Amino acid sequence: MTEYIILIVVIAVLLLGVGGTMLLQRPRGMHGVRRSRARELDLTGSMPKVEDKTSADTITVPPPAPPGQRPAEPQAPPKPTLEKPPPSAGRMVRLRARLARSQSGFGSALLGLLSRDRLDDDTWDEIEEVLITADVGVAPARQITADLRTRVKVEGTRTPEEVRTMLRIELLTQVETEASRSLRTQRHEGRPAVVLVVGVNGTGKTTTCGKLARSLVGDGQTVVLGAADTFRAAAADQLETWGGRVGAKTVRSDKEGADPASVAFDAVSTGIEQEADVVLVDTAGRLHTKNDLMDELGKVKRVIEKRTAVDEVLLVLDATTGQNGLRQARVFAEVVDVTGIVLTKLDGTAKGGIVIAVQRELGVPVKLVGLGEGPDDLAPFDAATFVDAILGG
Ligand code: GDP
Image (cartoon, rainbow, N blue to C red; front, side, top):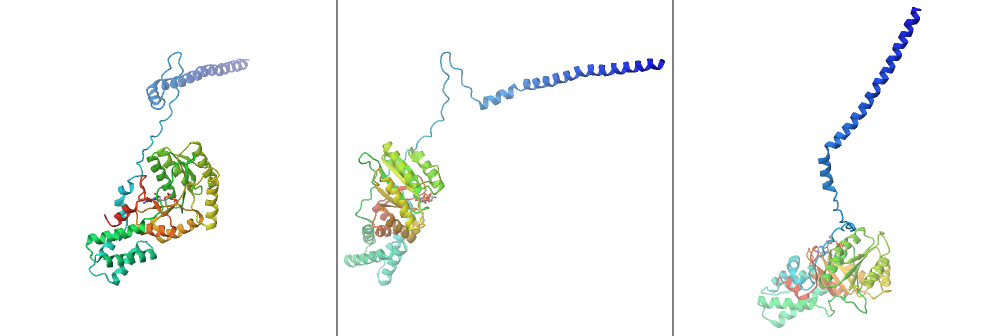
């Protein structure tokens, strides 16, 4: 019996113990939660300064609109200010020093030889050699030498001033052409003028398009650019950047390798719709085979002509490539009717004789020269300024 009583007491004590523990644990748990929530609140409570600062730095809260008014529209980012390029006139004179620097002393070498006391056969051979080295070409070099020989015979005396005048006249005769050097960039029959820019990649074609667009804008014309060099991924971006700086729209395709003719067509259509003065079309200059080039440029030209005439085909040549450049020029001239030449990089190591050689070769005038990488380093070609620069005048 006593054993039973002891067992009941033990069970009763145990039951009381478990229940008590549970009862004691519950409030402790709740207390814990409360404490952690309290800590959260404490933390948030301790951060207003930081939060306020952060929100002030990153979020601009517009002031509440006065009652009865609509809240203000969010402001668009300001448009980049357009640049005002200088007009084309007088650029070659401004850049003459660069031209003079690049001619590797060919003018002064000729002046030195022609001023010798005795002009024997060896001296005339040397004169011819200087001309050939300056990229004038063999036939023109011979002709210039023969002409100078005749002039010396006729005139007799040779003061330094006379030698200089004689050489100046001879070089001018070689550089001047009967064809006009002006660009056909005026609207006609209610349509924009269209200029197709062709040449081997790397010669400075896209840069020339960009510089020319600037120069035309500087002369007060409106320009649309066509990025029909769809094979060089960066060409369209490059052109768009040039155009964007002076407010000229660039028509391009987002697809790499898109049909150049279709981009050219769209560019001309945009030019017509926007009543632009000029549409400049940059083309790809892949010279795989003459037939490829003929197919591609021929198609671009034909497709443009569905909308309007092509007024100028400018062939871009890198003046530093000498005879190689002339070979390229020949291929292009067989494929399209080139109406003008752009000689780029005449500020570099080019020898100015290439002007004479290429005009003779193609029977087409040099219309523009590139005299540096700066945005306004493209100038209308002027024969007298060019010859004076060669002679260091
Ligand atoms: P594209 O492949 O024919 O379109 O050639 P780009 O227009 O891309 O030009 C090739 C490189 O020639 C670029 O680095 C140009 O800055 C450079 N270039 C173009 N014209 C001239 C110039 O007249 N003088 C100099 N020094 N560099 C030029």
